[in-house]
Amino acid sequence: MATRRALKAVLVDLSGTLHIEDTAISGAQEALQKLRSAPVAVRFVTNTTKECKRTLFERLQKLNFDIHEEEIFTSLTAARNLVEQEQIRPLLLVDDSALEDFEGIDTSDPNAVVIGLAPQHFNYTTLNKAFRLILDGAPLIAIHKARYYKKLDGLSLGPGPFITGLEYATDVKATVVGKPEKPFFLEALRSIGCQPEEAVMIGDDARDDVGGAQNAGLLGILVKTDLHILASLDAHEIPVTARPLTMAI
Image 1 (cartoon, rainbow, N blue to C red):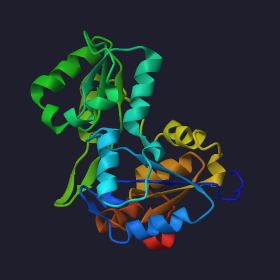
Image 2: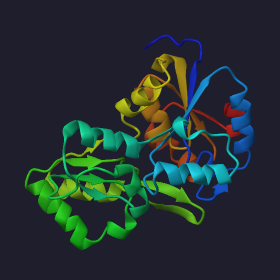
Image 3: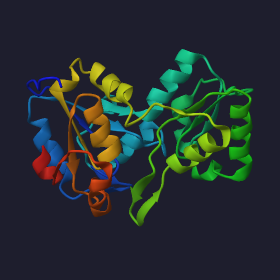
Image 4: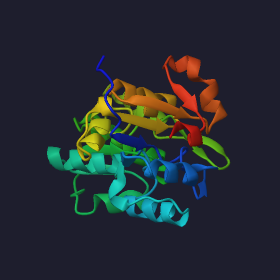
């Protein structure tokens, strides 16, 4: 295990940690203001695929968060980078509001499936099209595989169950680009110029935020914003530091 060094960077989750939809988590703005006074770099890392980065930034601005757009690193960005590197033409199963982050990508005659959270596209016809493409050899790329996410009215299904269904039907394992995958955290840190042992990750998901960060060599801090998730910690078997957000930073 790498020796911990002096803290240089803090990665912070967004949805469920700082806000839920158009509502800020109680105390989150104050906690972020406190973090800004510390001599550390900050990046906001998110698996959110419901909207493009620009729309997400505008939402956070309206909630009075001290955040700069260039500080946000999303799984949509990571997915686009992979699509460009592999020079593939994806069938994009993402929310229409997220399509802006794929502008300029050739989607004609698709030879790959890229899937995020896309409730309006999770129907038999579209999923069957994806199924047939994968059977014909198209790679399956999951922007992330979250089982659920938090909305104001409660937990809702994430893309994970739908991706797992395609994996089961095709006997093909998806390539995952977002949290909890190690390259996602390392890419976020690369833009800062620090090593994993010099960084911490703060988030509300024991598996994707904390477990993923720990697997990448960061320290993980779990915030108490969801009692349902906290109650399931034993099932994850992930050693975590769980604190109120205002105390975590």
